[in-house]
Amino acid sequence: MKGFSSFARTVALAAVLSVPVTATAAETLDLNQASAEELVQLDGIGPVYAERIVDYRDENGPFDSVDQLTEVNGIGPKTLDDLRDQLLVDD
Image 1 (cartoon, helix red, strand yellow):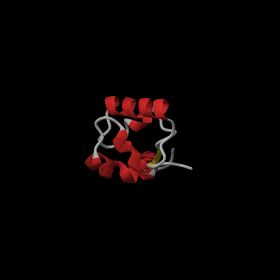
Image 2 (image 1 turned 180 degrees about the vertical axis):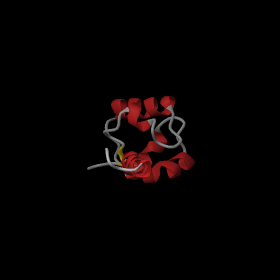
Image 3 (image 1 turned 135 degrees about the vertical axis):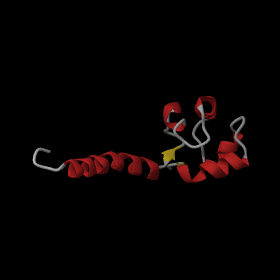
C-alpha cells in the first residue's frame, strides 16, 4: 500500500476486515451438518446446547425440520423462534 495515505490505508483495511463479518452474519447453518463448534456461534446456543443438538442428531438421525429442534432437551419454543432464521434443514 505504498503511495497511499494513512487514511486510504485505514479505509481499505476496514473494508477488507468487514467483508467476512457481513458474510458470516448472513449465512444459515444446516442443522444436519453443523458441528458443535459451528452451532455455538448461533445466538443463544452455548457449548452444552450445541453438544445436545449433535448428540440428539447422532442418536435419532437427521432432523426433518427446524421445528424438531424442540425435541432437544432444554430447547423450547422461544429458543426455536430466536434460532429459526439462523438454521435450515437441507433435503
